[in-house]
Length: 381
Image (cartoon, rainbow, N blue to C red; front, side):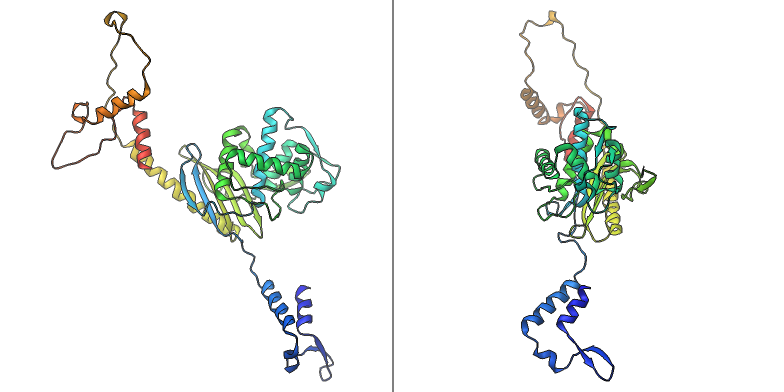
C-alpha cells in the first residue's frame, strides 16, 4: 500500500489510448515535476529499501559469575534497546517480592484491559482473567509474554509507568550505570536503553540473589490452558552446560541473548546484543562460550600441575615457655614478614637454589596451598 501511494505520487498515471488503460508516464513530462516532490520520492524510496538491522550494532560481554572476571568484551558499554531482556529485571523484582513474603507462587493476578491490549508475543488472556505468579513467571521466561509482563507490573506497583521507575532504581543499585527502563516487557521505547555490560551485571545478580528461582529459566516448555509454549532460548538442551536465561528482539535492537552456563564448576554469564539473525546470534554465543571455557580449562590444568612444598609444622606454644605479652597479630606485620622472607629465598624450605644456567621467579611463600593458588590465579589472569 505504501509503495503504491509513493509510485502514484511520484509517477502519476495517464490514460494510454492504445493500451486502453492507465500507464505511468516516464517521458519528458516527468522532468517538469517540482524538485521538492522528487526529493520526497527519493527519500521515500530509500526508506523502503532500508534493511531491518540493529541500529546499535553488535556488542557482547562474558564474565565468570563467581569472581566477576571478564573473559570477553566488545563494545560492552554501547547502548542498545533491551528488548525482552528487560523482562529479566521484571522477574528480578518478582523474585524479590516472593522472598519478602509479599505474595506466593500461587497468588493470582488479574489481567487488566491495558495488559490484555499489549501486542505479541502474548498469552492472550482476556481482560478480567487471572494467572498465578508461578505461571506468570514461566510465561515470561519461556513465551516472553508482553501481556503478562504488564500484568505483573500493575500487580506490583499499580501502573507499568511506576513499575518501570522501580526497575530503573534497582538497576542503579546493582551498578547498571547505563540502563533505563520505560516498561516491563521491553517493547519499543526511545528512552529505554541498556548495554551488554549492564545486562551481565543483572544476570549475575539474579543468579547470586535468587538461585532458588533460577530453575524457571531452564524450562524448555510451558503449558497453560491446554497450550504448550516452547522456550525461545534454542541453546537450552543443545549447548552443554547452558541452563538459562533469556532472548530478546525488536527491529531497532537486533537479536539479543543472555546465557547462564556451567562447565567444570565455572559459571558464566554471557550477553550478546544486536545480532543480525537469531541463528547468527546463537552461533556467536556458542563461539564465545567455547573460547571462554577453553581459556578456563587451560588455567585449571596449569594450577593442577603445580606441586607445592609441604606446609611447615606450627610450633606448639604453652603458657610456661613465654613471659612475654601476647598480642593479636597485626595483619600488616604478617604481610611485611612475608615480603621479608621472599627477599631471602635461600632461607625458605623448598626455595629454588641459585643456578647460573636456569632462572625462576618466586611469587611468595605460603603455609596453605589455597593461598598460593589464589595468588597464581591472579598472576595468570
